[in-house]
Length: 169
Image (cartoon, rainbow, N blue to C red; front, side, top):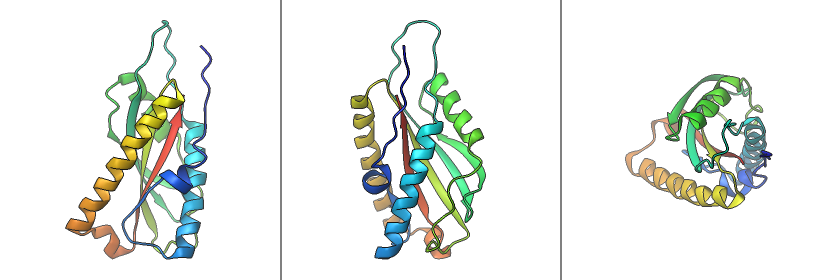
């Protein structure tokens, strides 16, 4: 089976969500462009697991949390949400280990660090990716509403929690 990669070209503009402090209009555009570039890089670096036996793999969603500095250097990572499948988790960990640097944060971003949540979507079909994408967007909206209700400590420091989406099929 030929594994083809695809890039979520609209991830930064339409699907990657920013959590935390609200940005002004110009800043939002810079951050949107930055998220699109990061999502492309992450999608490109993702590997779809190869299985020796012919078998259909389920769709899977894992989450890797990163901490980066202004220059985009990855200071640390963790697998925050398991996909529930060892082969996808191995691929997600491999991605976390291999990400050393993302593009530098936009000049308009004021904090020295950012928390980056990366949603990794694995599917053999575009339809599967789209279905998971809808679920991720709903999850992120609920998380954002929950943070607004409880108050976000990161917002006090000017640091943002940024969500990105990467996918591979």
